[in-house]
Length: 213
Image (tube, rainbow, N blue to C red; front, side, top):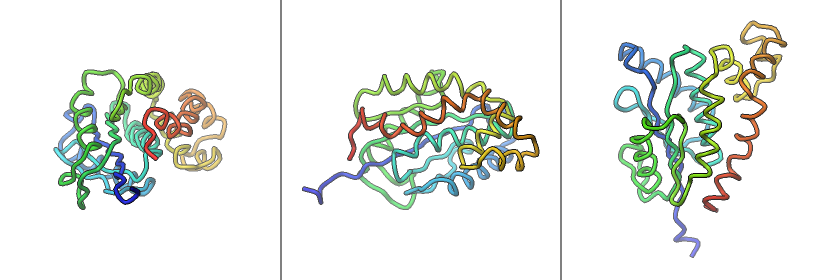
């Protein structure tokens, strides 16, 4: 019956890479700035909250935003410093209990995301996904994507951040105070031509493995 249909959740659990290289107060400040940006750029069921000092968790309104938000977060940190990065564990599944905070909520999506986050340090890819069923081919796509993202320099991440948020290349050039050809050069070096279609088609890719509608 439609009234008994289970609600699907998209839980992002993320932690900063190399956070111990910075004083705890600086890590918290960086994460706070990042979360303000993410809250402004995406739609959340539960806004992301910092926990354990260098990690955060939040619940997105739709699976379609999962990869976009993950890349946005990583580009934001990489644009600040070359040694800053983020691991993001995406869990998509049912939600049994949704309160006003992710820490007191529960469900399949929370468990999948949390378990994945605990195991990610063993893997090279810094964006990973967990679904109720097999996910290996989908994770292979994210592993290939990692070969691009891990090489983003600070200037490339700055340009990607602008492109992700909908700015055109002239606007990015104005914002960064560089030439339009330099913007195009950084976008090309960041392999934006390969990243953009994956973001655009991510919901179709997920749906092929997990028909949640």
